[in-house]
Image (cartoon, rainbow, N blue to C red; front, top):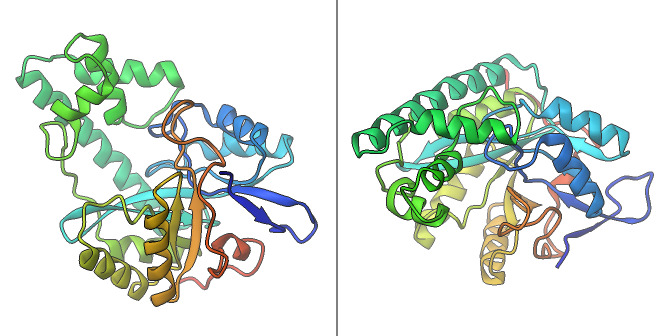
Length: 303
């Protein structure tokens, strides 16, 4: 089912498709930013946020294409942080790109991701799989030029090509998935710090895919409570075609903590588990975060 959003632009009366979560070759996606934007447009998306992991590298290319297609492109990013010993992802939207704290945070994450890639390479070499970083980087460069570190999907493709595994699923199951040798824990900033960084850049802030974390219901509720207390604005209530009962559970949390709601496909590649502009409907009673994008920005934190 398509995510149809009505009348986000006051100058446009037709229904629109919105997608606030997708990834390009600037991080771990398969399409270059321009190609991704064109594909989104072909699929009817008219308001898009490119939310690559810990980088803004793809935004300029995406914006040029969006402008040519008369699409609305919102500044977006998906930042890595930690909470309760787990890696958490926070989505920032419509922020000031040159905000000093945000630029410093992205630079630190950039270096941290290269250190992580080097450690994955070292660990795989110790298990008889040398050349992983070089191979993963080659996979990454085939998809599009990027100055960012290769991510685990790039390492997975290298392992397939080198004959160490049959497919990417096996690569993650044996070597790269949660708790495996290639699951290198990074020293990400704390959740509260990341939210403060985004608020200092006048961002609207959403907690990404809260149901994807391997938490009990009570721990997930504590995460949402801490996110709201730290100044977060919304939950990503709808992430692609996640089960309807998860959408319902997240809607309950959004209502309980007075949070707005965001939606997105979490698109990474054509033919993957998600597609641009495709996700379950958002419950009608929730306040849509994107309705704020064309109005006043949230106040920056000055402390």
